[in-house]
Length: 303
Image 1 (cartoon, rainbow, N blue to C red):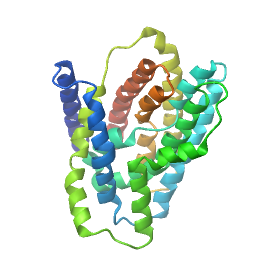
Image 2 (tube, rainbow, N blue to C red):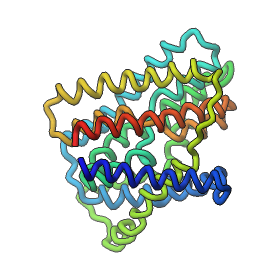
Image 3 (cartoon, one colour):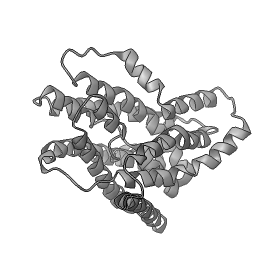
């Protein structure tokens, strides 16, 4: 428990540094875009390569991929049902916030500090299924309801997914792994060095994007979104934790993964589909704060 709380304390301090630098105008929120590009295109893929290049793909790990994908479909359907009486655009904006989790930026830094490479292996496999949900289902919902007469273009969605370097890194490393091939030692050494930057950069970015100014008019819609995300996630996570006949790390992964914040990609989608960016940003910020609290409480009960 001491290690868990220490890691949380260090994480909060780094996030506070990022937030403080933004408040003091040393770093601007716009600078976060450059940092996020470095994370998603360089440091996070390095973590994936270094962590997954030689793991043994067990049955339980493949189950995490399936669970990450199936859960996204289930909550997406529940979300569209919950928002069925909303206007078309509101249904699209609220609906795309329901499926998908921020695993790469939020969970990986904490998981690495608490459970090391073993934790990254489990959460990474869950993130494979989650990535398909985030870049596929969430994007489709946002696109379809953004305006009247939209035709679902699966080629466009597949094109978007193919441009996700973390998702493609997962796929390539997975194929190399199951084929029995090995990456050159030089690649492993370089990714080992670069991957060490992922945790501090991710936490600093969370602090840079953190905002405590919320519009009161947003509370009703955000309350529905967060209520569905965390109510469903906690219920299924707790059931899975006590009922699934699997190893502890698998149960920890499912329980914690289902209460993580909404995917950071929803901010990009809100810009592309001309949704209310301030509403989406507020919802994303609140989900980060709520997830931090829940993960800390549950983590202290588990570790």
